[in-house]
Length: 185
Image (cartoon, rainbow, N blue to C red; front, side, top):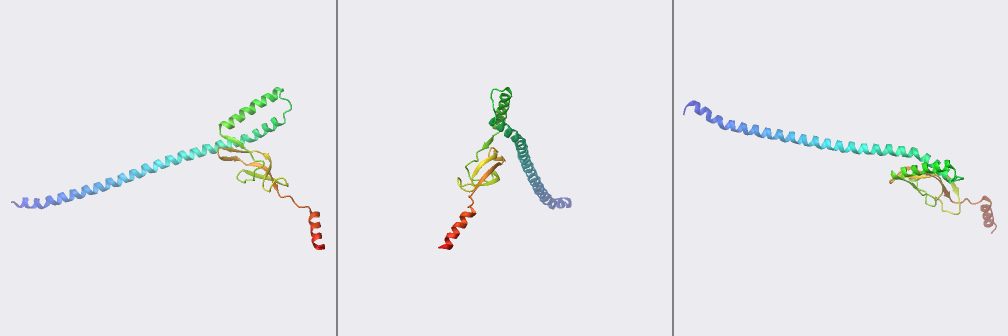
C-alpha cells in the first residue's frame, strides 16, 4: 500500500460519518420546517374560522339593529289597527296591507312579540316603567304592557316596557286603629 492509499483509508469512514451527520441535520431541519408549516396552516385555518364567525356576528348585530329600528313603526301600526274606526275606508285598507307586510317581514326573520301580562317580572325580558299597588295580583307580577317586547330567535331585541304590581299599602288610618286597639287592651 502506498502512502496515498493509507491516507485515503482513514478518510473514508470520516466522510461517511460526516455525510450521516449532514443527513441527520438535514432531516432535523426538514422536520423543523414541516412543523412550522403545519403550525402556520393551523393558524391560518383558525384565523379563517374566527373571521367567518366575527362576520356572522356582525351581520346578525346589524340585522338586529335594523329590525329594532322598525319596531316603533310596528307599534304605531298596532295602535292604528286597535283604534281604527271604519274598515271600509281605503286608507285603512291600505294601512292593513302595509301592516300585514311588515308583520310578514318580521316573522320571516324570526321576530316574535312575547306575552307579559300576568307573568312574573323578569329583568331579562322587561323594563319596569311603573309600580302599581294591587291586591288582585301578587307583588312582582306584570299588570300591563306599555310597549311590547320582541325576540329574534331566542335573543331579546327589545325589552317590554311594563307596569308591575306591588303589595297594596295599608291605609294609615287602619294602622292607627289597630294600634289603638292594642294599647286599650
